[in-house]
Amino acid sequence: MAILHRDVHLDGAPPSAPAFPSDHSSASALTRRSLLRGGAALAAATLSSLPPVARAAGRVPFGAAMQSDLMQSDPAYRQAFLDHCDLILPMNELKWDALRPSREEFSFWGADQIIDLARANGRRSRGHCFVWWNALPDWVEAIDTGLEAERVLVDHIEQVAGRYAGTLTSWDVANEVIANDPTGEPMRDTFWMRRLGIDHIAIAFRAAAAADPHARLVLNDYDLEFTGPEHDAKRAVMMDLVRRLQDHNLRVDAVGLQGHLYAEQRVDVDAVAAFGRELQRLGVGLLVTELDVIDWKIRGGPAEQDAAAGRVIGDLMDAVFAAQRPEAVITWGITDRYTWIPDAMPRPDGTPSRPLPLDARLRPKPWFERLQRRLRTAL
Ligand code: G3I
Image 1 (tube, helix red, strand yellow):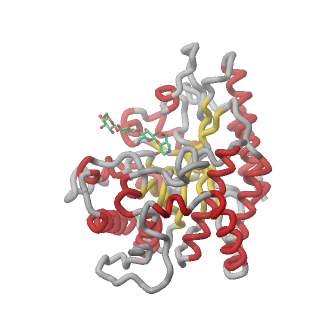
Image 2 (cartoon, rainbow, N blue to C red):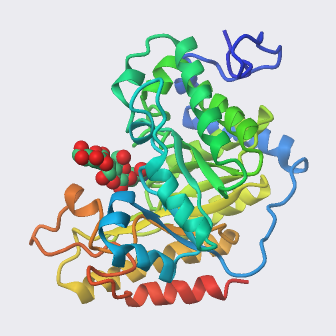
Image 3 (cartoon, protein in one colour):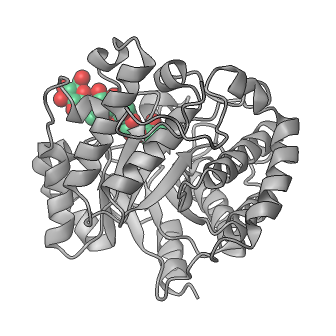
């Protein structure tokens, strides 16, 4: 039974409107061919009915993701965000594993520390994330029916988005729902996909729109930036998801390019620009949500690492700005002192990674100064 339009109050009969198929066949239905065929038809149907993306005036906000434990333990880290950021968001504190120790409990302390710091200092904040394959507590993974999974998902979004309603600029409603290599199965095999099928994305967007009508709703993913068939496919799947959600009267305000940039790879400037222009035609904005540079394959030292970082970041900015003004550019942390990257992809020679705007001694990198100038003078 199609459950895309299942009323978020769970007892509503599904409307007669057509919906995503709600079983795994939907994943195969999202083949590349249907993406292109369906997308073109839907695009034509929706082009004229959507307002253009509003072009904000003034500079493009720069932001960074903060960790609450570090904010407490490292005052210089905390101050660096206040020195450089227009927007400060919780990196992990709004994820299920941080928020929900049990089904009965919500633990907002960590998120509140960061969001309150931002607001007390006249900065913006945003939420990350509701639907994700990772960071799910065991009690969620133990849910074994679609009805219960939907009930828990909708309740979570209502409680969390409702708590911060009107204070966050946007939410990553769904994060990394596309397969790593979508040239085969386009959708990632996740708990939410297994319990609810592809409709879980629509359920989340509908619940978020109801719980916080002020926040912009974002579909967030990685590897949308590079050259290659798997990246072309990922951009195509993302575009199809946006169109299908819109086709079912759901508001998708923006796509988040995470921007975890491999320094040895090439950003596909033309393809990303075309992707961003297509989104703009659909009335959908762009953010860069988790910018950092993975430099494990860059030989040499800091000068070579920073030069390579400057290249890929510059290319990404060229691509994004060629399409539309980004709503924000956000890095995933602010200093090389604390980053996920060396744990996941350490440099073979054991030297420090240099992924973020400030080095381990909190000194701005040359590429960061260029980026800040570009964001401040954006037309
Ligand atoms: O806070 C607890 C601490 O109390 C506990 O003692 C410790 C040891 O278990 O874990 C701490 O939580 C960790 C958390 O980071 C804060 O440090 C989690 O175990 C750890 O899994 C978590 O890793 C984060 C990861 O997402 C998973 O949530 C990384 O910091 C974070 O950078 C990474 O961010 C993701 C984005 O959300 C999505 N895009 C990719 C990106 C990089 O993987």
